[in-house]
Image (cartoon, rainbow, N blue to C red; front, side, top):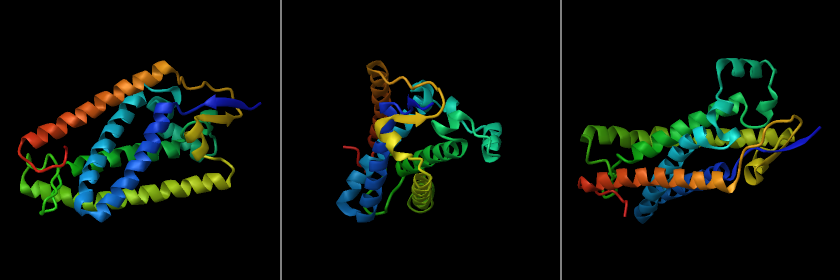
Length: 229
């Protein structure tokens, strides 16, 4: 029997597509440079707020968005690789997909974090570039502009390939992330996606955005040339 299950609540879906748009914008503005770097910094701050939101939402969000539901423990991963997938693996993230989610969150946090300390030796400086040594700024700028950028491109490419592979197997990963629901041949719980949960998500997002704003403002107060206003 096929069941229609709410897998991704609205806040999770908005986070996902917001992050996609930000990553595209960051890539474009980073390549254009010049005045576009003002938007590059703003998009970087947005990514940091979104990642912080997703971390908090991983504990208080909808059923399938919580980390406890898809954390890739060794036992879960081994069973999945042996072909012994649980019904839950067909709903939210399977163990392999879960690993990529955690890796991407860590990578995006690192990329946005290092961006706070960057300086192009001309006019574009991260808001925290004035609170560490010049050697540290040089190191973090190099990591941000080289390794971090290339790792994100690689992860995005792998994600797109995974989407295509699942589409070929008639298992869409994109549509559920648009509408929230999924057809499952198992009776599994639906994620709570009510006005109350959405209000809670908005509160969390306001809090994470305020935290990033406070950090950037504090850095600018130290006399750096970062673009925060």
